Image (tube, rainbow, N blue to C red; front, side, top):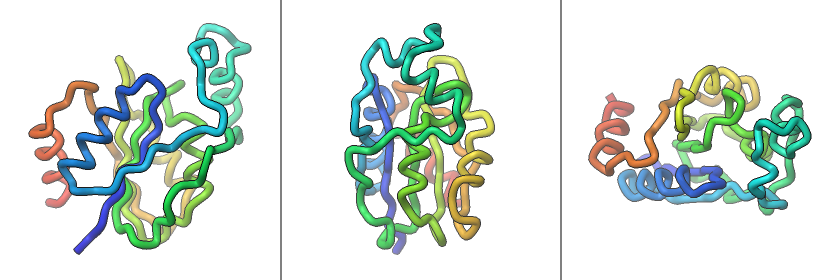
Length: 160
């Protein structure tokens, strides 16, 4: 039987709520990707070219430190990877998490939350960052108010 984990990064709580619901629906473990230095509201001001997130996202090699690397993925077959969309992709702190783990033989299923942006080319970017022996689905933008029933419908479609 396959074992899944929902690893997610969230600042406002929207992605966290979706991740918790997804973990319940899938019977999966849950892990919060947590930066060593939490983001503040000024850090997230995308209009400010000097804000932390703007500086990080303008450098594709930026890797903000994590509070911890998280659980070893050796016991998992599937990793649901959740995050808000920042500048059309996953936040740099998610890239730090990806760098910290071996995804060989894993199925990675990205999901994002966003007020208006879709998941874009995130799957291609994730593929470029992890082991070529991993499978990365295209992923999906999930609304912050998605019901457990809709999550179940989505994940059942992944099994087809």
